[in-house]
Length: 309
Image 1 (cartoon, rainbow, N blue to C red):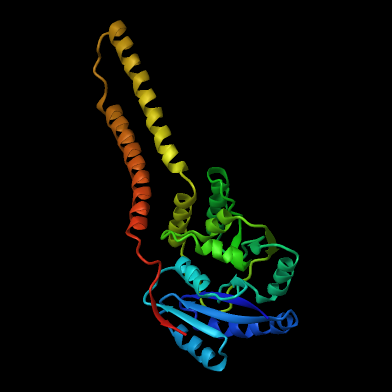
Image 2 (image 1 turned 90 degrees about the vertical axis):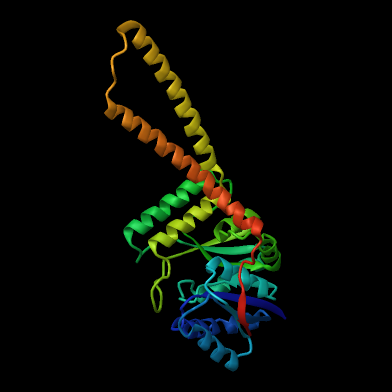
């Protein structure tokens, strides 16, 4: 029999853990017909509620349920990597515990693997239930990434993805500390089938992703899969050097023709402020890339495990 590893990153999902388990069990009959066994790997990302206790309870009832509990909160990216590292299956699927990734799609997703696809990914066709401002910036982020990155990052893409062992191993071979999984999925390639579905709201609890966290995460994606900001800094530098040369010529010609009238200090202050701001922006861009390099060369572990079942 083949083995399917179901990887479920969790952070303060005490209420959703049992709901997810019960919904997933509804798909067992289909997989038994396909001679596929399930293993469920809950990855606890340093939760402060009873998430770990709930998973322990499920483990006592069902030995197919496993737990990887971090020593602290390392982030969802670390949880995904840890789950894939622990997965022993011929196939692996990433799913959220809040049931926004419906288990009912699994039979259809598996059928595409049988047809020869290497991975089956999902994307939302709507953002119903999200604040309008958040949806707007999300769409702008994906549009920007399509223009500045060679890696395919699909608008509305979820982490909900069913993969063959070959794809899992390819993802695990990318051991970078600063991880942006949506970009990694696109970078490793392989033949991928996309499934679309309407946005589904959480069963219990509230999202852990604030607007600020999503903004920081988007910057991670830009710096991980594009060097366009560095090119922008260079272009701004060349542009302002050219502008300075033009202004020098204007001042020289003006002085030779009209004399040397004293310029107003307000315009000088504005020019200095503008140039200072552009310089700080460019230094900040370079600094961000250097900081990512600094974190990579220290070679710290992506996560630390406190408990494992």
